[in-house]
Image (cartoon, rainbow, N blue to C red; front, side, top):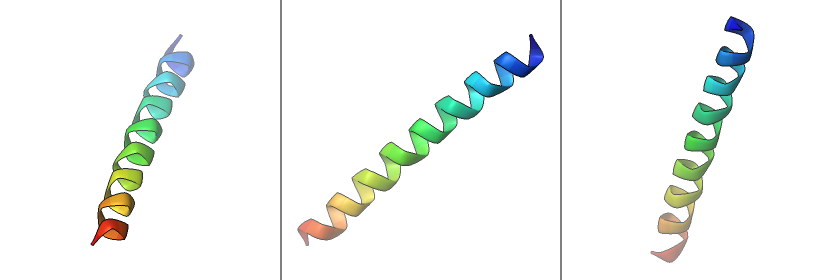
Length: 31
C-alpha cells in the first residue's frame, strides 16, 4: 500500500513539475 501511495504521489509531483516547466517555457518563449 505504501508503495502504491508513494508512486501516486511521485506521479502527481512529476505532473505538477512538468506543467510548471511547460508554463515557464511558454512564458519565456512569448517574450
